[in-house]
Image 1 (spheres, rainbow, N blue to C red):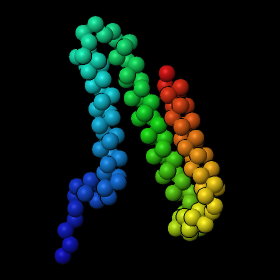
Image 2 (tube, rainbow, N blue to C red):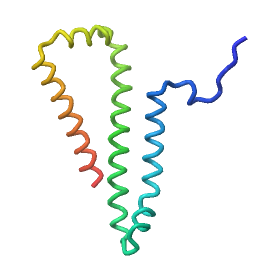
Image 3 (spheres, rainbow, N blue to C red):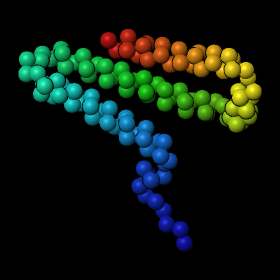
Image 4 (cartoon, rainbow, N blue to C red):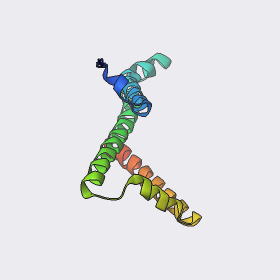
Length: 123
């Protein structure tokens, strides 16, 4: 007879657990940012503390957009009938080193511009 695991955090793997823990810590930091700003400097105005809250909010927004886009990519990948991800990784490893480097650079640039766009949208 099998026993059901009722705790939802035990059913997910460690990578997802770390994501959930990190996001919960960022939400906690978002809520406590004005208190920390006032704790270290008693002359802190409300706007000074709000800047740190906006920065944390933009980080949370960026992480939420990354997570949503990843799940949409996974759903679209299986729906469109594209090749398996392991096959794509093997094809990537066959590329020359400069093509791999340009792909890494393009991915970094897109992530960086996405983060800058989140910060610009919040501020």
